[in-house]
Image (cartoon, rainbow over all chains, first blue to last red; front, top):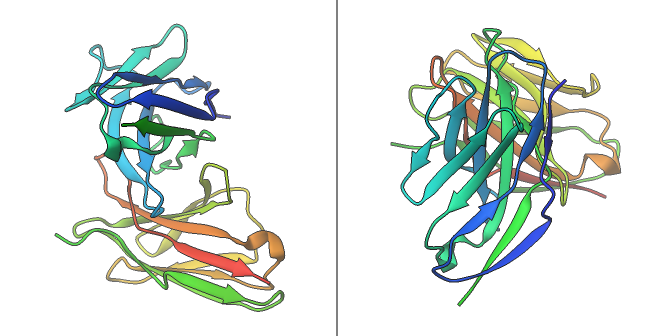
Length: 117
Length: 112
């Protein structure tokens, strides 16, 4: 079974500062993928970044980077130069990649990020 | 390029009634997944449809059923509604070999 743990229910960060959102995971799968999604108050889940378990480099997408530490089973999201529009719920998720057709995403409980002007 | 669309946006039903939610996937996507997100929680996987068949199912009772049409759009049906079914229902679409799933805006269901 897969499990995602996000231990920060809420965070307040000053605009233009960098922020790290924590995510730890547990799985017995040999091959897996890790995702971060942003959910504004409108409700839509917006895909931010993906990291495969066998990827040697940490993933980056614009201001987003994923700090992947496989031995520690952590996949923290780093947002550089935060903006007011970054205020939202952030969810870490994972899926098994070793079985074709197994696309189920397992989500954590999320972190509410608030950017302060 | 249209993203994932869902209808209706909001819905209010009474306990015991039945409801149907609809989803159109992103252009080029052939797989649709449904998730239930209770207030203050992360989304929980309900099931996934591929080639008009249910390919994978989460831990949800048989009251939750679905369908996928030849154009890849999908419906989620919930029978005998309970108060605990009140949630945001999210549809996500994807295609292999890409890994990410793209979500729609959701349908907020309230059961009174």
